[in-house]
Image (cartoon, rainbow, N blue to C red; front, top):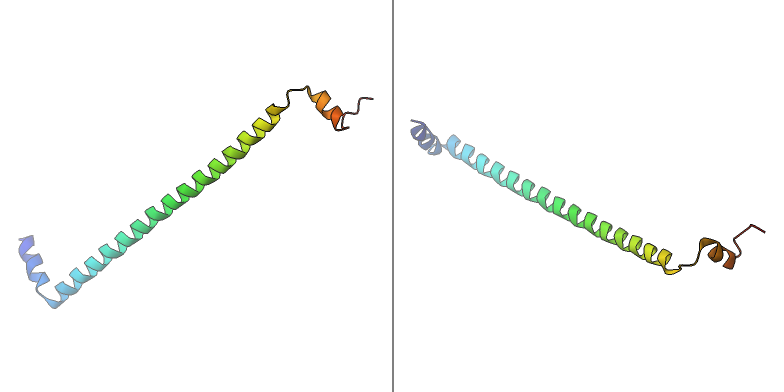
Length: 85
């Protein structure tokens, strides 16, 4: 019964307009959804790049801090920043 109604409706001018509007709506929603997914992926790539850069700077800072194994008072004394005298 429903198939007969849809077949009859698709044969009329109004039916063709409804079908065309439905197809256009599906197309618009598809493009919108794809755009959202692409933006989410781009945001994820930006976050990963930021994390990678931050991690690299943190690792470099740790290496610099561990490079000089002398006690803190010797390092500060070398630069004239130890004020215990």
